[in-house]
Image 1 (tube, rainbow, N blue to C red):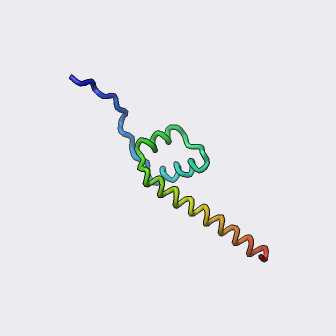
Image 2: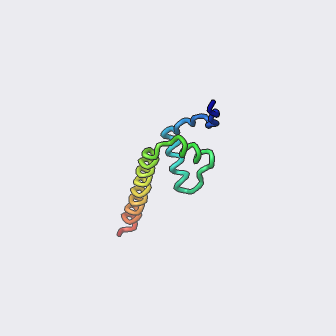
Image 3: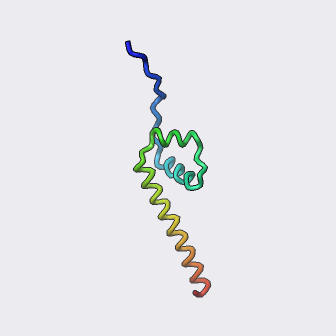
Length: 76
């Protein structure tokens, strides 16, 4: 008779909002261990990559817009 496997219960996949918070936390390097385990056990890498790309573009475009606004107000 085979030994019963001691598998942890299946983790629920993170929601889109959970994924956004996980990516933002990873930008700052403050991800909790519980969330890291959830992300690596149940999360899909493609979703994390897509969210990271979108958030990076938002950050870069925001910084660019702020610089353009400051340059315009400085008369340059």
